Image (cartoon, rainbow, N blue to C red; front, side, top):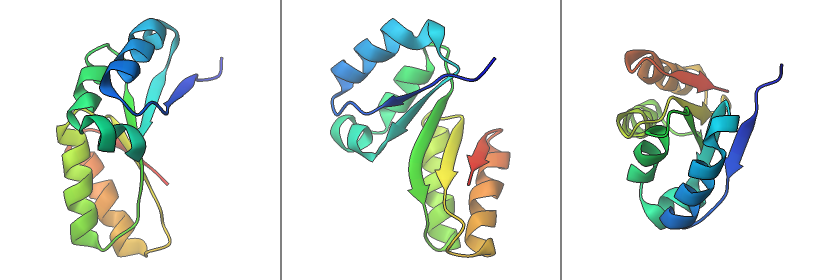
Length: 110
């Protein structure tokens, strides 16, 4: 069976939680991005994760290693299970994302 991942492109907390609550039992994961987090705050990730479905932060992380670590640590501390990162900044930048994911028991998708 294929995994079903919801791209939760809502921009408000209430809309995102309503959609997540009504669909989570059918999903393997929920992917959130900047529009939702900028509109609702990063804490919405934890609220969604509390529904029992893994949350993937589609942040396309692509910065210097220290900044990548700070971003990824925040994502995992907020309740996300995985983060999406880019490889083009270089292996040291990607390694920082992977190290943060592993330190938090999460995953890094490239």
